[in-house]
Picture 1 (cartoon, one colour):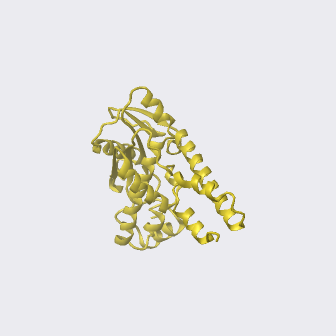
Picture 2 (cartoon, rainbow, N blue to C red; picture 1 turned 120 degrees about the vertical axis):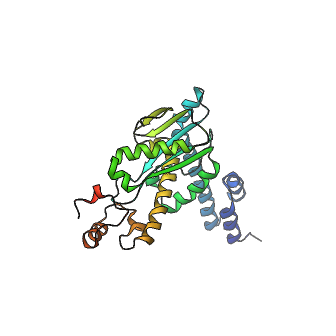
Picture 3 (cartoon, rainbow, N blue to C red; picture 1 turned 90 degrees about the vertical axis):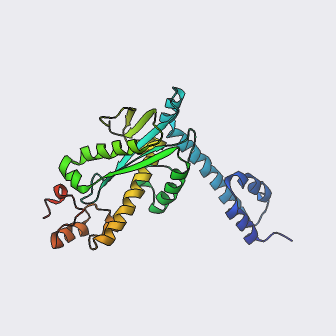
Length: 254
């Protein structure tokens, strides 16, 4: 008696990538249309996995080059929150293990909130070291957003327990640090370390903005994360600003 399709589907659903070859080999000669589709699905999953590994190897080239030159710890740093009208600017720094190709790491803006949350847990568990720092709206107003971004990055670096041998940064050269650094344009999509940092910074700041939404309801901080959406600007004009607004950013609306 032929094995039930539902049973075969359950096998596929619970198969790891390492077991896909066995699944494909076991059912490749089954002529039932539904099983043929399951085998095709397994083949696509296998191909998608290899494509992802190749992508991760490609975005690990900066790190690989530094390891080949004798670096032991390579860090990536990125920021989130330079553009919003409210909330802090956040920076994260991450040191991944050499050759640890964590599936899914990419520019945080290219990922869903659910995927970022999943990767946050994986990155923070598997990284050699990581840290986050924030600079408040008040200080952003005082020293300007660029200097606030640099400060957040320096503070994140200072929180690391492991000092990196080299730092990869997204498009900026951070002043006043004693670590060799390389600025990479669009680095959050070109460097696995910077991509990891972008995810940690984004998730951390988004969670904080969700808390601010409860403290200062009406501005939609949980949804807009402090950015200048039409509804956010409308609310500012109607009810004024709250303590986490950047006065230097909203002066045109009040």
